[in-house]
Amino acid sequence: MIRPAPAARFRPGDAVRVPDLRKRGHVRTPDYVKGKRGRVTGVLGEFPDPESLAYGGAGLPEKPLYRVSFRQADLWDGYEGAPGDTLHVDIYEHWLEPAE
Amino acid sequence: MGENGHGHPHEEPKQERSPWAARIRAVEELLAEKGLLTHGEVEAQVRYMEARSYENGARLVARAWTDPGFKALLLEDTKAACSELGIDASGSVEFVTVENTPEVHNLIVCTLCSCYPRAILGRPPDWYKSPAYRSRAVAEPRAVMREFGLEIPADLPVAVHDSSADVRYLVLPMRPRGTQGMSEEELAELVTRDCLIGTAVPREPARV
Figure 1: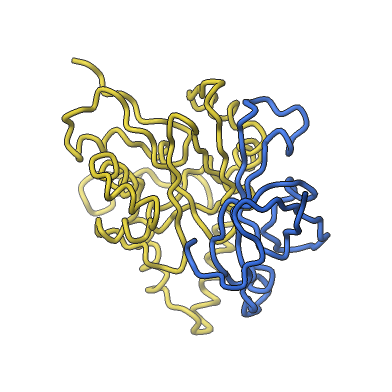
Figure 2: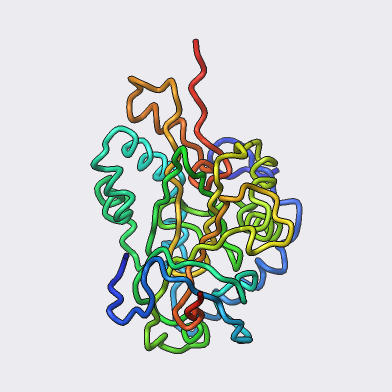
């Protein structure tokens, strides 16, 4: 953890899914993880909401930010690589929902 | 060719300023005209950025290879480790260092733009910002690294880090064999910019 996140909803080890919120504009969640399942590997802290900051807002309330790991084979059809290959993305809390 | 006042001619730019450069200049003029910032502030920011380079990262790596306590600090709190070496990374951006081990090789990309630990390493290479690198590094990292001349063994997992939010990532590569007894300065010379992104690994020193 880099910054405190007292209100963080998820913990390391939690299985999560990235919903497709169909938001347009300046979202930081890459398309290729939308609808995919991953696992929280770390809580990075609370950060200003980029979806507010980008349009002149104050970024409040701040959003907990998580490291989320995905299996590459779960992200790409026909992924060529090792079964243990992973991809890690930092995702704000409102882009995560519990999975399992 | 024109004289520039320090003894040798520099080549004049062959092309007119690009439309992007013209636009940036126009925006800068407007901001200055409206009193939102000064040309001096722009210059200062350019100097700040130009004063940073991957050599800062090479120093961090070389110290981590020779000092286990420093390595632990670098992995736990990259800003604090920078501060210990006199590298000013105290701005609002956060940094995480990921460690290459015999169990994992790390590769950094920013698919959404070109997020990069600029406060430590300066500007990213142009290819890092290219749509080709940004889209391919996540989907086919091994093929991309192969094109950089780096073949990752099939049994070594690759971890790609897409730094698209508030944290910037850099790679702590493994210390190459055959480097016992080398000084910190000599070790730092083995660490190239691409080693800190993960598209290269430090070479073993040539045997003489």
